[in-house]
Image (cartoon, rainbow, N blue to C red; front, side):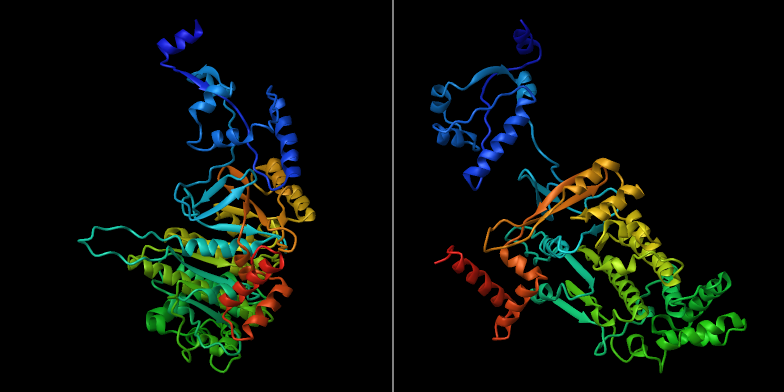
Length: 531
């Protein structure tokens, strides 16, 4: 009676169905372990699973798309009948998060092998990313994969033969600031890339006035003032009066000289200001002016950075010993990048753009009254908000998830980042996170984070290697896995032995690409997987 009602009134149909589970494993032991786990799961829902070792091939073929055969259906005696409405309740659905887009820029996997397509620019809020991973968890692998995915995500639009074809344009422009040369190899793999080091041999000017497009727009005056504050007061605080007058001075300098102004002009105004509270600031700007030790970084001796390559890496390793100079250089680079983003929008260049600040943990330390970090926090918050307005993304990568909650800089970044990518964390850091109660989602998300792990590559033992990452976005918290080829592992490696092997080949005249290919081939031959 119920079946007739479903057919007559609810337009259901009678269908034949059979249920089975097919496991694809590398070894028989893995298959047996999987069966024990999945059978226990089904048994709790009232289903009993049985193994079938003698009828495997037809079952596997029948489970493949378009693989079900009429003969198999008729003679296997495994099919029953149900209505289409009833099938909704007996069909098992086991799947993870399907990602956030049907047109992915980056594809990860999950623990069940399902693809997770991602597009960080498909967000209702902003496109910014906060990434954290303990040492050796795979942060460099993840960020490098993100860079490769972004650069290769352009769309080649088809056109009629009668119309001229558009040239292919890569999908992004990426700017990376790093300490440690983690991206030097990757920059060498791209033709339209530039690797810039800021040390004693630097040949570029970082004059911040050259990065201003309109001093009255988008907090540009605020960002410039924050930079001057860091330059003039690395260890002491400026008074409210000094801060207000500095606003006035910067506007006067801009009105007089525009983008040709120098730090020297600000110093001159401060020293000649009728109120003597500005005189100490003028003197404290001395190191950045003519005759000072940092003069060459900020004057007109060298040309400004063009910011025109599709991949630009700014390496601060050589200035990390001078935290004051390092922070000033970083702020000037960010201002230059934002100017490029703004001008590109005005020129209708629709490429997506991303700024990545790696090894950022030293900028996120608890400030404890350190005005230099306080001013940088104000600066980075304004910058992170400005990225969203111009369709760009900021990505900050650090070591601990807690780095984002111990200082004003970290709080500003986390508050303005719609995405969190959390790789493996130490037990101590997770306990701190649990105690601080700062991570959205509470205890369930923290328990998920505790399960995140990394399987490091060892080609002499197995070809399986991955880094797990907890993707946290809006109301989603989902563990995913990053798998990379052996070649990409060598490009991104920070392992000293692997770096030495690469350098041994390049010292013989090979290019980086040829050296890595040679190592991959050598490992395959050693393991007996290549002739």
